[in-house]
Length: 325
Image (tube, rainbow, N blue to C red; front, side):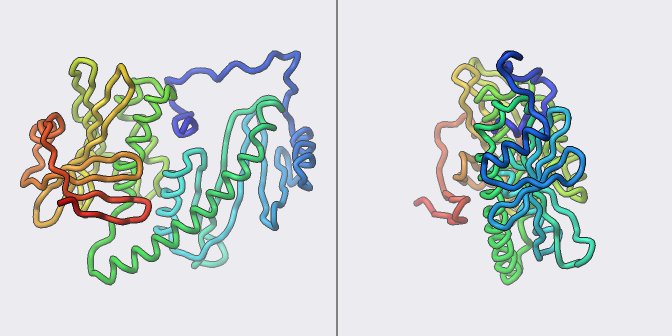
């Protein structure tokens, strides 16, 4: 979770490094020695870049001015939209990993996928305990990507068969996953509370994880209200206007600033002109009352009510919804 918000301007400086007398500065030659110690055969590609293979798969390390990057590239047969959706699904699960999608120059049916981990590392001792973990994370990310792409293909086929427009993940995932992750980052001490009200920065962070053609959707993102109730603060975020069930119009964070815990609520588009109140906790989504209005004041009134009638629980990992009667 920490690397999700690494770029945030309010977070100044890094953890104190070991004293100069004990720390061994990292450079490309030492990186080659580390790779050999890990059992790999490094090959220098060009300035500041080394390639090595693991189980027949090529990995690339680049190191320049303390910036360490571990990268793995592979082609996949799919279209650009599904490739980006799978990328968002991986980044939602593994926040240390960046996933890039580019069209293959030679085959229009292929997309080139890049998985990478980036970090600022100055010394050998800051890298060696984590190098094997970084490699394992990249391997896990690839497995998740392939699995996620398979699920997306299956879901798209089912939705097309039902003649129902597919969910816009470029709207759904930021609203239902990335915003709660931001609040969790504050609760974990990884970003200051000012991050929750920095509208431009939040918008930029969301857009940076989307395909270029989808970024304009989030120009309409707004922080609608910030209100204090004793130890609690209420943040209301307004998302792109919902078009497909179950996209949310509003996301609401009810934050206990003393205990650093929070609840996350949504006002979602439903069928036949209706709206649904919901909540999100980890991988579990809950739907409550269906209402006739998207009135924000009524939504806030419901958030503070004690009589929340639960209707459905959705396990987002297994895509399974259970009715509560």
